[in-house]
Image (tube, rainbow, N blue to C red; front, side, top):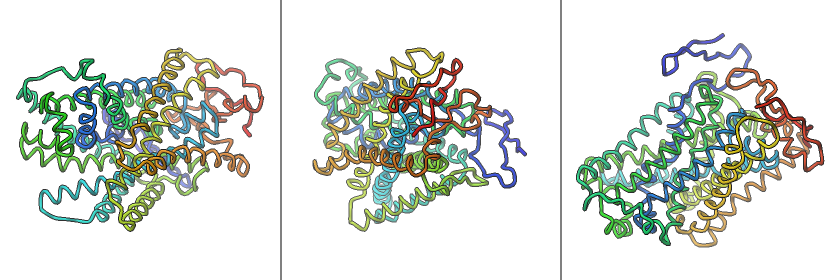
Amino acid sequence: MAVESKSRNGTPQQTAAPAPGEAPQLRRGTLGVADIAFFVISAAAPLTVMAGTSPLAIGTGGIGAPVGYLLAGATLALFAVGFTTMARHVRNGGGFYAFITRGLGRPAGFGAATVALLAYNGMQIGVYGLLATATQDALRAFWGIDVPWPPIALVGVLVIWYLGYRSIDFGAKVLGVLLVAETGILVLLAGGVLLHGGAHGLSADSFTAGSVLVPGTGVVLAFAFAAFTGFESTAIYRREARDPARTIPRATYIAVAFLGLFYAFTIWIVIQAYGSDKIVAAALRDPAGLFFTATTRYVGTWAADLMHLFIITSILASQLAFHNAINRYGLAMAQEGVLPSPLGRVHPRHRSPYLAGAAQSVLAVVIVIGFALAGMDPYQQLLLWMNTPGMLGLLALQAITAAAVPCYFRRFRHDEGKMRTVITPIAATVLMVLALWLVIAKINLMTGAPFATNTVLVLTVPAAFLLGLALARRVRRTRPGVYAGFAAEPAEDEDGAGAGAGADADGGADAEAGERGGEAAPAPAFGASPEPAEEAR
């Protein structure tokens, strides 16, 4: 039985209703390019990044800061080449861990899965601290009300849980509205600055070599790479995307291009608002108020007030995007048999991973209450201590995924070309490793924490990976069937066609065959995914 609905372009599409006794599945063919792009751009929270962290980048790196964001965007565009090419072949809904399993083997895939859970939960839950402080500031500024931060954070958990509980297309509509609001206020600022000609006339000084090649450029790059977190989650929505072979690559490139260009343009605008000779002093003097002061001067007080409100909605949009991503990771791992099976259930009406969402929300409540009872600060500790391992984890996963791409494609014949499967992924691997090193080297500027605390935050990521390796050994020993099916291709193509010869039921045995001295399987048909060499141990 099927229920006919219409896609956004008016074309009828079939949304299959589960047969009696059949478990409901995620809603197929729901998300278009714009929907997925809204999810990943919202996760990056452009307004929050610009108003919150870019002043620190300007204060340290000077007027050349816009170029740092362009360079970060270009690096991630290189990563996207191999990532999206592999996405056309790997139909598993596990995102990073599926890609890494298929390229580097199951142990690495288990390690990536635990890092992904740490990273996405850290990014999402930590931002409840930022939501609380931003809301406190707005309530105090508008009505003179002082509200403790824990109730605000807990209300935020409830709101995000409900939005994630609803259908994915409902969430996409909400994110679309919020994203337009937060980018729109920055566009208003840009219009005001351009119309007035800036403080002393518009200048291109930010793009000269003398402005870019300064001691603080490394700090700018560290902030810039951190500003792109979340764009890689396009592949997680594969099962809900329309024509995923095209939708996912397009959404990925749109997200990277938009964020890189929008970040660089917005930072250049605020530099023009103050003037190249005064912007650094202004950023150092009042980083939190840099954008608000400029908006008041060039647009009006009403726009600055709206910016306060839209920062709150920007944070909520980011949390919803990460919440949806975590839920789909949890759903995929539960259906793999790694996480408890109830987390793999889909709501019969909303077609959302509602139990995975509920579990993630409970975890958020526990952590928020724990930080509150310990008397910790919502920004300096809840946000920074949770977000830092999350950001580092996502950068590490990007580097490992880039390395997995050439390893995956070397094992079977295809028509993708060496530029997309070898040269660009290797270049992206080197650049992503350098980016990770750079962020770690400058981590004290991001957290403001002592060396011992930063060391613990950094080491959390490799500790999670090692935990995944230990989990892989345990699952291989105690549940060999689950281990053998980890990150395997679905029995039926997510686009509606049969998997055919291209399906890799092994999910990465080829990558492990060399360790056991086994022979690689014969190359499958041209353009197909590799077949298993033998059952993995």
